[in-house]
Each structure stands twice: as C-alpha cells, then as structure tokens.
Length: 487
Ligand code: NAP
Ligand code: MG
Image (cartoon, rainbow, N blue to C red; front, side):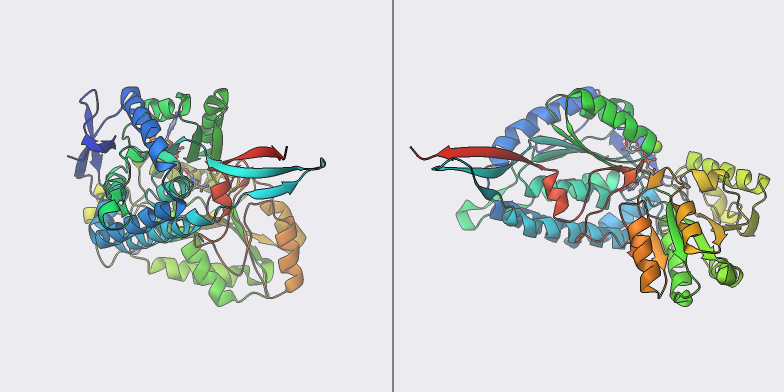
C-alpha cells in the first residue's frame, strides 16, 4: 500500500482510512492509498513550518543542487514511475515517458535559477539614503494538481517553490496519487552539500497528502498557515479556490480550463498543420488544458484538410496505454467520457456532421475501460456545447472562415483564453493574430510543448498568474522594500 509523506515519514492517514486507485483501461485495482483529511493536512503544515526555517536558510546554490540531485533520482527510477503513471492515469507509456522527461527538465530549470534570483538597489530622493528590494520566500505553499498531467503539473509548482526557499505540500488528484507519491518520496531523499557536510532536504520540505478535494483540498485552501496556493484544475473549482483562499489573503495562482483555437490560413504549411492538429488535439487522449479544442480552417482548404486529418485518425490504435501498439489510451474517468458523449450528442442535435469517431471504441478488452474514438466534427454550430464549453477529451470541432478578422472574432468569443495558434506564411497575418488573440499564449506555426523557458498561463476564465519561465519564481517570492539612511 502507498503511504503519504508527512514530516519526512511515510505514513497512513490519521483516520486509518484508505481508498483504491483503479486503472481506467481495465478497471483493475492499481494500488491503495491513505484517505487523508483535515488532520493530515494540519500535521503536514506543522512540519512544513519547521522545515521552512531550515530550508529558507540553505544557500540558494545548495537548494539548486538538491533539485538537480532529485532529478537524478527521478531519472534512475523513470521506468518504474512511467508504469505507475500509465496504470493509474491511462496515458500511453510513451506519453508517460515524455511526462517524466518534462518533469525533470522543469525541475532542472528551477535548479539552475535558484542561485540567480536578484533584488535591486534603488536611488532615493533624500541625500544619504537608498532603497533596496530584497526578495524572500513566502513560507508554506500548497500545490493542488489535476489528473491529466499529475507529475509535470506537480513539478511546475514544486520546482519554483523549492528553488525560492519555500516548503510545499502537494495534493494530487484523488485518482492519480501513486506516481506522485513515489516522486515526492524520491525528491525528499535528494542530497546537497559535499562530504561530511552532505545533507538531505529538511524533513517536511516536500510532503504529499492524498485524499479528496472536499477535505484535504479544502483544508489547504482554508488553513491560514499555508500562505500560497498554486492550483491547476477546472474553472469552477478554480473560482472556489480563489474565494476561499481569498479570505486569508493568500497568494494564489490559477491554471484553469481552456478552449484553444487553432487558426489555419490557406497559405500555411498544410502538411505540418494537419500533423500538429492531430497531436494538438489527441495527445493524452485530448485531456490537455492547452489542447486544440476548436479548429478554424480557411474555406478553400477546409474540406481537404478535414479529410486528411480524418485519415490519420482512422489509423490511430486506441487501447490500453501499456501496450506498445496503442497510440491513444482511455479517457481517465467514466464521468468524463459521459460528459464527452453528451457534448457530441448536443453538437449532432444542432446539425454537426461526424467525419470520424463519435462513439466508444468497442469490443474485447476495450469494453472494460473508458475508451472513446478520436472524433472529428464539421458543420458545428457556434452555440453547440463543444463551441462554448471546454471539451476535455478526444473530440475536435471544425469551423470555417473567409477572412482572418472573422476567425479572430470567433476565436475570441470564448470565455477562455489560455493557448491559441495561427498557421500561416504571412508575417502580416501572424502579427495580427499575435496582437489580437485574447490568450495568455500565441504560437505561430507551432503548438506549445510546455516550454519551461516561457511563462504559461491564461487570461479571462483560464486563470491568474503564470507558471513556467523565470516569471513563475516571482509568484513564490515576496518583495521587501528596504530603506537605508547613512547617519
Ligand atoms: P478539478 O476537478 O478542478 O480538480 C483539480 C484538483 O482540485 C484535484 O486535485 C481535485 O481533487 C482538487 N479539488 C477538487 N475540489 C476541491 C476543493 N473544493 N478544494 C480544493 N481542491 C479541490 O479538475 P480536473 O477535472 O481534475 O482537471 C481537469 C481540468 O484542469 C480541466 O479544466 C483542464 O483544462 C484543467 N487544467 C488546466 C491546466 C492549466 O495549466 N491551465 C493544466 C491542466 C489541466 P480531487 O481529485 O480529489 O477531486
Ligand atoms: Mg474533477
């Protein structure tokens, strides 16, 4: 049975309760984890406060060294972690491997930045006086993570939090705790310092509490001693996070839902665009915040583009992520598949045409899991649920347009504003899209690979603040204004 890591010890929940984690491809039990509640979070907070005193005092260079060392441990155990991730989440082993690669790359990025945090010297109006801006860690942070990328989205919080000298308590999604628990256990073993001075992370620097959002999650939001909340998840829960954490004036970042538009002009490299529309929508079985969720095609290329994309989808092997032949795993949750089915039925009722898919992948072993075929819809009305809502699964609605202005207006009509892309060889069109798209991110002839180098986040209902990039560190540091007068 898996355990939580609290105060440097692998522990059961205070209540002694547990729950099972199941494989979405087979229904089989993958593991059992402690069902934590408020009390477990409170214990973790105590340990995190104690650890903060020590960890914030470790030199930035050593903090970086510890993160680098943690990465070596994760890489060494990568194959085992990938297996766990595939079993609990459903994604293919290839996707799980990529996720671990991304996790390590991100942690290494912040390992390097730990010793590069700068403050500033500020000339002041009075003679003999000057100001400084000193940047200090905030304290105990809470990271709440969804099930689509359990490890990378944990790393985007833990990396900058630790680099800046904070301590962090991670709450994984209820359905994907196993790989996270294993990775946190490894990070806690990371060493820094040389020879006799070699140490491991102070106990309580990194911790993981498993259990429901309604208890573990709520306590992380409410507990006044947790000063900073990093949340990734759905927009409705994100609103709630901001309301509850707001009462304690906590620092909050929110990475929420998206409905990214991909706009393809007739002068684009169409071969590349078709290939990327497939990856952009169907990677991770379409369960990506930054997935292509609305495809806008210029009229003259629309039919042939959609036809070629459908041809790719027809060859995609749907199945258990553990099998080498599988190109797309199951939807993670039964309820999520039901939601996808309802969204597709709604689109059909409003006149959409199913070019491919539109139903479950069936037969034999497939009947045991939450499988769904990759689905392409054309003739989709603007008020269909797939046009208005986030579609968190393998369904791509296609829209057509005459002019770029028309495409931009439709793209911006969404309540979301996370990613967006334009595909064109025209600098004029590209620049216009960069300027006008209401999104936290615009990619030209490209899709996001989760670059650690660039800030990532949303506008409108897609979120608040940024993860990734040096910018993310700002959200884990408090600037302190200092005045010094020479007397
Ligand atoms: P979710 O239901 O909002 O859950 C996310 C996390 O919040 C889980 O750990 C969940 O725990 C926890 N939670 C639930 N209720 C809570 C509460 N009352 N207080 C505190 N925590 C609570 O999201 P999801 O369905 O797992 O994930 C899919 C969503 O995430 C999509 O909308 C997707 O677009 C978004 N997402 C955004 C980004 C981004 O960077 N912008 C990245 C990935 C995903 P339980 O599992 O225990 O309920
Ligand atoms: Mg949920």
